[in-house]
Image (cartoon, rainbow, N blue to C red):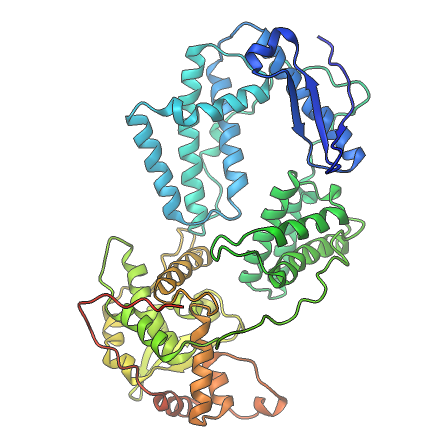
Length: 529
């Protein structure tokens, strides 16, 4: 059957183009409608024509399959189709896989569905979608075998994504088991349209990010910057619906900016802040595309000049630091925390990291990545070494911080002594990567503290840094010494002369008043806003 060529339909109000096609009379019962209408997600006429041709070919394949008798799939075809689903799941979610616990739960759900005989109910829609896309009408036996194969492929994808969530991005050694899928009856190209060539990986948007990061590591850019840019690129590719950097226009970036400003932050339930969009999303796009221009991979930076005007300081209705009541509530919750079913290192992090932050004003990640060998006693003083070797430090410089005597009384040295060698609160991946697992532990710490202090005007751990500075000023402690403890940059050239010695820092730390928190059998009180 020759594919009828039609033109993209422009929506009267939104100006977005659509694919529209009347369903042939003999297929209306099977399709379930008289007309097919699919958004092409673009307002650009040339792009709409290209996408229209792709959708038209896909729809025609589906209709041809409905008219064809059901056929059997070979074992190779079944595994190849399952491989498509594996690849799509991994590629779509590997950039930001979330928590490893989520993927462990997904694997468990697969097992429960299989035991209950509900694989058809759970995986049937995904199988139907790929069959429609590939223009296949298969018999019942092949469908049952395909669902089994898709179940195995999805479990394998979940296992790979769990590794990614733990910071392990080594290739899946079993991914090569999937043969290449070859569509059995590829229709002739639509007259007037050229078949697109395979996309060069170097000019995919995600490929540009990878290239930027390879070079950025050599210039000392932090892993947290890469994580931020990676999250932005993942959102941008999902928004565009493609990964082709050569097709990105300034209008695309503007639309993405507007899209992000209209999004709701899942944590706060409020719109994403303009500052986040400007300083994280737009900054990330400008850096990655700018790198591509510098390296002659793109002729121009589509994000150049796109910004948000008038982004000023947020109106603050309270202090950035914890109040006395909030500080005591968080520390009481940590002190009285009982071991549960969670990982023992996560429990230890919740037990000790809030106290460490409270008495040093350090960043949460700097303590969450702490190793046993980073804590030592010297001349009667317990000292923590905060170093980039353990994971990541914002200043990229090692520093030593003396511990408050109260931490010693609470038993932190005993905890260190009984802990195995290596990281105290993080389980590095099999490849030794710490950053992914570290992010997971920090997220769990934030969730734990947020249960105690739900006021979203205060950041769960940055609040300790603000409080530490406030108390130091009240005590009249030398600002240079406090900056050295907290890892803040020098304020002036004169601050770079001389050293902040352990002796001076110890006097400063010991001047801080103790938090009078008692062990209790009661749960910590949740602070109200």
